[in-house]
Image (cartoon, rainbow, N blue to C red; front, side, top):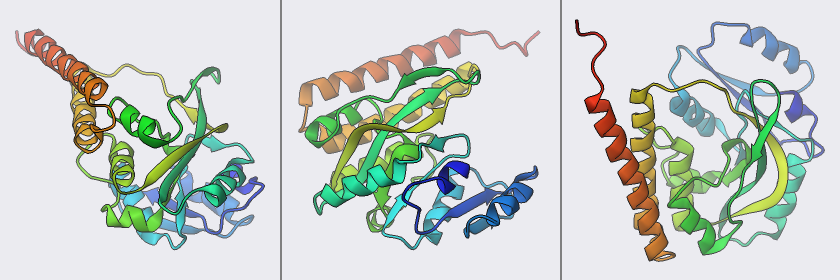
Length: 246
């Protein structure tokens, strides 16, 4: 919230989604409310990330939407950088992002987002991975609503929305770092890793169906590599003994 208030170009509206919090969130929001007017969407009970961001999307009134996760923060020039990019973008653009810096739990930099910045090279990259960092991205509200919002039932809901937007419009990434993303440490269980791989494969298959004309060979290779990883992870999971058995 502090990084939102300190922008050189202020947001036209700020919407906060409180997904059934039971901690000190309400008091913190009240303290920020004395400095800036914003709307709070309070969900009566924890509904999950996709439901929360779609609830926020439904409440938006501006033409362009910028998102910020609770554990990320913007540099003060983020919205100004985006505004300048939108002023120069073509009329078919529905998705614009900047680069993001990654941080770990010990407040150390661990890397920076990468990938192509526009055109078919960007679409081709999406068959392998998601180049748009969620907190660094702005998108056209009308295009997102026509796409049905963030898709449910998948782990990478932002990836799914970006693929839909890039299939009907253009996107670009400004090669300037204006966003900081916190990557929390912690090991996933074998079940969670397998679920994540399967969900990623689903997104890659969707991107391949839409963008394979951009890179038929490399796109097919990337899809095949992820399929092999899913197959191997499934095999390891099936061979691992159940610790509950005696």
